[in-house]
Length: 185
Length: 185
Image (cartoon, rainbow over the protein chains, first blue to last red):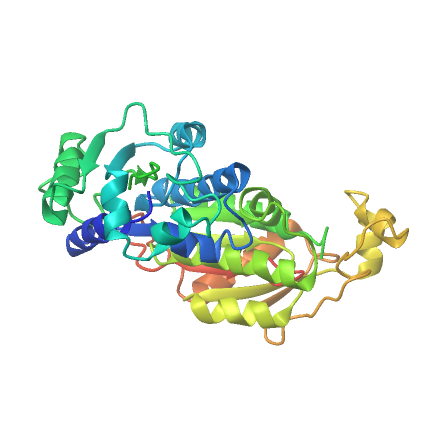
């Protein structure tokens, strides 16, 4: 959900991969909304279209050996599954944080507005959120540091054999896409 | 313009580059309209948005060392120049064909409909087309074969040092984007 820590974790991971000269792109929800989905709203249909577009771009990059980190609110399971089927090496990460903590944090002041009824279709308040049925990872950002959560993602990538100690640029055979998973990265 | 030969040439070039194991993607106007710009129409504003989106995706790919061939109707000079500034190694190719030949070809039957007033905003008929001021190449598809036009593009790529005889996968340092140029590839 908004404020759960998707962008923070994605940026940390992105930086770590860049240091290793990985070909890596971060597709952040806000940037995508500006560049690919301006004009789309927050109805279920528009949200699904937005996620499909992110999936389309992620797949283009991934099949050319570029690792893609997606940090976007993607509340509906069905479209996530649809995108997952299209992309090789897709990892779904659920960035979980209890609603009361999100409301307390409220870094952008959006929860206050949503609770006051000033924002329609706000995921978790006035719009549904469907948690993934079987994510590769669930990160609880209310009780874990950014560093430790990033380590958990890193370990998952090692376990999946997507990152290796001997990694060097040019050795990157197949792309890697991290999926938008509602509250997830 | 529609029917000038953009897709045909782009596909031929794409095939040739694939054979050399180039990392290459073809962004065709119709496919992009379906996947990234569904809902956009053909007003100047919507056309410009469509071209900016193609540019955004082309740049993402190009900066990761993927060659991008864009085949799209892009009738307005200003947005082409805007995209050109954002993308390194941008080559603008004007695929030119006289209107009377296009009307005679009319492979999709669109000119007949446009001339009958059944299609609004049809480039070259009811919508403007602004030819590029200084394209890298102008191809006259009414008096040249697909093979020879593809050779001309190939030669241009060699001259620009984007393709080399000794090209091998992995040696591809910087991306390459061919620009949508109205009637151009």
